[in-house]
Length: 283
Image 1 (cartoon, helix red, strand yellow):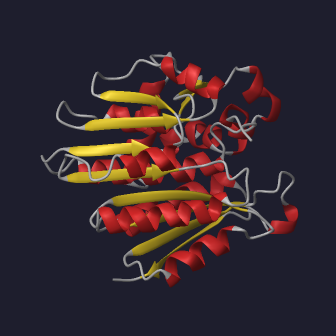
Image 2: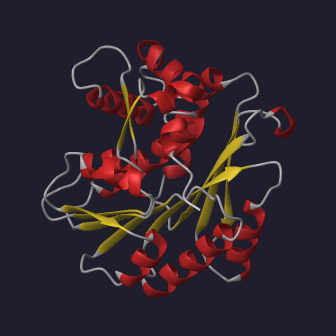
């Protein structure tokens, strides 16, 4: 089933959570000179126009990125990570002073790509992949129309000393949670030091719990999770009441940097918004 199109949800609170985390990770990786292979298993279309018909239908960005963008001057200095993220978001507007576009994970990954790094983007939805093909990307970024989880495993081990992976499915199918868990276990086996980020939705049915429990039972180490809850489960009109990020081998200091950034952002994301970070499995 390939009904999901992220354009309907672009720039929502979960995107803020996901891409703040992604930006924190890539900033950390760029501190060292050694090359990195980045793999995005569910890339989407790359950049989303906030004036697109799909985005206008739900306008979820109005309760996500928009209030942060509007308060960016007031927020300046509250968090180095949030400052850097909002500055980068400004670059994505291509000189416009208003919020016109929301950049997806391919844009965030490509932005810091150096000549000796590699970026592999996977997308299985034909319409989304066609849009991704139209995006301007560096020469060392490649796009593949296909299953990102299978494609990731086929490319291991990578030729660069470091590997950074973003796994961000739609979870349209219930089995995807355990498929993601199985993929992460295999990545950890084949590339022990890989830095992997997994996004998951917080839904009243709590299907993500099976994924988390499976990873703990598998004996993985160094798994840190971050959950941004925007409202109580029963108050969610669209089902998703929160956003989760699970990180394998997170960089040192990520928890503090992300916590500080989200503490500054939370008052603008809703009266009930809160964030919690913890080690799901320690070293």
